[in-house]
Length: 341
Ligand SMILES: [Fe+2]
Image 1 (cartoon, rainbow, N blue to C red):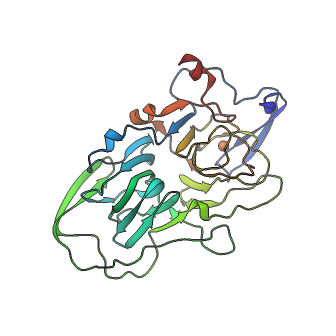
Image 2: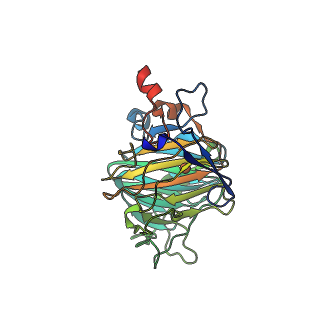
Image 3: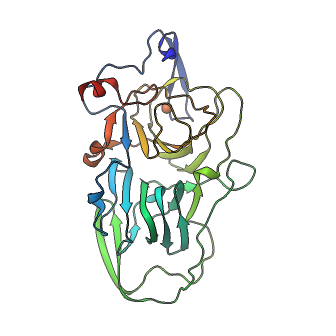
């Protein structure tokens, strides 16, 4: 809170990290607000807080908690394999595994997934989870604009990238199978008398891949500010996903993003990002809302990702069940909300 006594340098940014920036020196601390009236406000959502009964039916589909037409954050809890394959034909999906383990079966092969994996499933790829242990919990980042996994293993921060392995038995499995095609907000089922997923061999570009957030080295740049590593690129720049794990450097200044909503999804400790210390918490700061955010130089370490999107995210009805108003200094629940409860 010491930063709340001025003067404060306030950064105004166009186009996220890429555009012109301007600074103001102000006596006020712009993130501070006493209350809000209306829906346009920063929030913190607990992605583990949805009612598990909503997912009890194996046919249950992911639930959006933050969304607009081009991008959404969705949640899925699953104890049993789904009785169908899913194919999103209008959007790419990054599955962020929050808990449990499973085998992800895709047309490009199979992948074992575990907590803190970030799995890119490009649009028009059929997939299904099997061999679930515990409860598979995931946040799914659903993007109408194309997402590309840009970090490769080498001299940069990434130590490992995993791609699907061939099916142990790709022979035709007969029986009744269903593929649910997701086209925007609508769903169509296609039925076949064979399993549509197994593939004998693949070649060419790697389209399905996963990285684990714990396989990223942190880069020590001493003091100053450093752009975080970009994990998933979008050539339209609508939605960009970065590693925002603990790192050296100065605390970010107070800033206001003119063009981007900002979400930070906390994945793992042991350290804390300000007041955020529970895996599965996600903050949402809408564009044009002043914020600072806590110190990122946390010696104990933590793992988090940053999602920047031009989309105008709204908290959905399901999202409101798990959302609380947030202050934007340390990202704790806003005092106006704790006082009223
Ligand atoms: Fe920010």
